[in-house]
Length: 146
Image 1 (cartoon, rainbow, N blue to C red):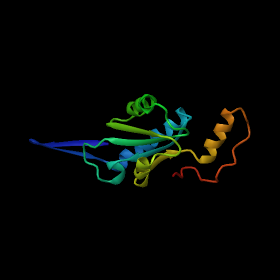
Image 2 (image 1 turned 90 degrees about the horizontal axis):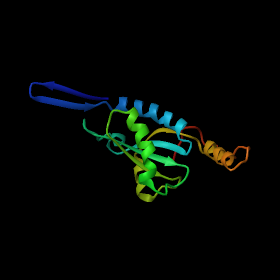
Image 3 (image 1 turned 180 degrees about the vertical axis):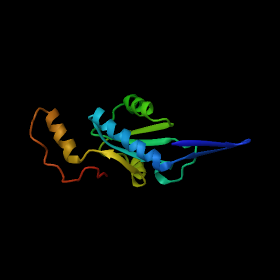
């Protein structure tokens, strides 16, 4: 993902954006299997916008099926999960199904990495509530987001 090339006293650090996004999609898909409350994973920041440098980190927005009550504490398991699987600096932002306005701005330039359809999330909520029927859903296709 990150390459360092040296020639004499000069080093060039580059980051293969396509490779980073490919690997992020792979790990984001794994995260959906591990964290049932995780609804969607998006790349935000310089890598999403294409303004990254060779030393840029990864900024992830994780959309949950509920608003986080203690975001810093609740972020820990996600941070460990992604950082153990990626060899790059990482920042994580958590948001619920209705993100605040400042987060919505980041969504406009984000890159979708992985997610569940709203129908899957609704069905899971009903199962958790003790019902077995599936939710009516919105007809949204797998992978479509906000």
